[in-house]
Amino acid sequence: MGTLDGRVAIVTGASRGIGEDVAVALAAEGAKVAIAARTEEVRDKRLPGTIHTVAEGIRNAGGEALAVRMDVRDPESITAGVDRVVEEWGRVDILVNNAAILVPGSIETVQPRHLDLIWQIDLRGPLLLMRACVPHIRAAGGGHIINVSSRAGVFPGPGPYPETRASGGFYAMVKSGLERYSQALAMELQDDGIAVNVLSPLGRIRTPGNIWAENDPENPTLEFERAPHMAKGTVWICEQPPGEFTGHILFDENLCAEKGL
Figure: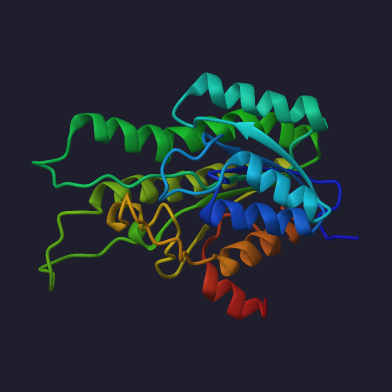
C-alpha cells in the first residue's frame, strides 16, 4: 500500500528531467499519474525521453500512468488534456506545474516572440492548468497543487550589485509572479481543502532541458543529473493534510533535510 493510493496526479513537463522523476515517485506511492508534455517522439538527441517512454516505465514498475500530449502554451490543449485524465480516471487530486523554459537576452536584445513564449509557458500555462483542475480537485474532496519554481524567483534586494547579469531576468520575473500567485490562490482555496505550495530546486540540476543550450547537438552528453530531492519533496507535500499545509515557498534539499526524507 502506498501513501497516495487512489489519488490521480497530473505532472507537466514529465517526459524527462524533474517532471519524470516527480511522476515516477508519485506513481511509486500508488498515485495514478498523467505524464503530460508535448514530446511523443525524440527529435533532438539532447532531449531524450517521451511521454510514452515515461508512462511505460511506470507501468513496467507496477504503477499506473497515462501518456497525455499537452502543450501548455495552448489553452485548448490544456483543457483537452485535463478532460482526458478525468475521462480515464474520474478525478484529479494533484497537479504539479513543472513545465517551463528559459529565454536568453537582455531587455535590449530579447526577441518579442521569446517574451511571449516564456510568459505563455511559464506563467499563463500554470494559471490555465490550475483553472482547469481546481473544480475537479474540489469535487474530489480537496488535494494539492504544487508549482515548481526556482531560486531565480528570490528577489536580489537593492544594489549596487557585485556582478551584472543580462540573462535569467525574464525567468526570474515569471517565477516570482508564479510564487506570488501561488500564495494568493492558497488563501482563496484553503476553505476548499486545496493546498497550493511552491517547490524549487535549491541548486542547479543538470537535466536535459537545463543543459540543452550548452549541449552539443550532434554529439550530446547524456550524463544528466536526477532530481531525487524534488521527487521526495513532492511526495511529502502530497502526503500532508491540505487544510494544514498550504502557501509554502519551499526548497527541495532544505525540505528533505528538515523532514529526514
